[in-house]
Length: 235
Image (cartoon, rainbow, N blue to C red; front, side, top):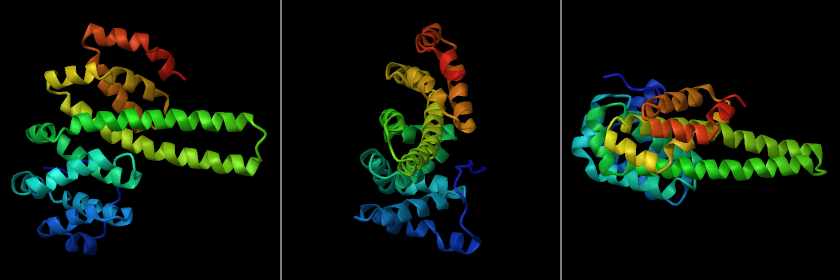
C-alpha cells in the first residue's frame, strides 16, 4: 500500500523513528492544548504516522476514540488556524484514497465537514479579494498596498492546498452515487466551477476531474452552464 502524496515535506529519519503509533494518545492530547503551536505539533505527528501504511489499518481498527477527536477537531477548528486545518485534512485525505476506509469517513461526517470548509474558504477569499481590489483603487501608500497584497497572496497559496485536499477527499467519497447526489444538492458543482479561476495547476486539475465525473448527468451539465464554466476556466 503506497501512501498518497500530501504535499508536506517528510521529516528526517531520526524524527520519523521518534514518531510512533504507540504515542497516538499523547499526540491527540496535544489537540486540546490552548496554543495552536501545540495543536499543530500533535496533528503533524499523527500525519507522519501514515508514512507507515500498516498504521492506517491500526488507526481504523484500534484507535476509534482518536479518530473521533481528529474529526471533531477538524469540524470545530477549521475556521481558526490554517496550519492545523492543513494537517488534519492531510490525515483524512490519505484515508480517502482507499475505498475500504470510506465507511469510517462517512461515519465521522468528513464529507460534510469538507463541504463546510470549501464554502467557508471561498467566502473568505471573495471578501479578501474585494478588499484588495478596493485598496488598489484607493490612494494607498504603494508599500502599504504591497504589504496587504502579499498577505492576500499568502492566503491564496494556503487556500489552494486546502481546496485541493478537500476537493480530492470529496471526489473520492463521491464514488458512492448516493453520496454524490447529496453533494450535488449541497451545490458542489457551483463550488467547483467558482474555484476554476485560481492559478494552482494541481487544484484546477482536481476540479476538472471532479467536474468531468459529475458531467455524466445532464442536470449537472446544466448547472455548469448556468455558472458560466467556460468563462470561469478561460479567465
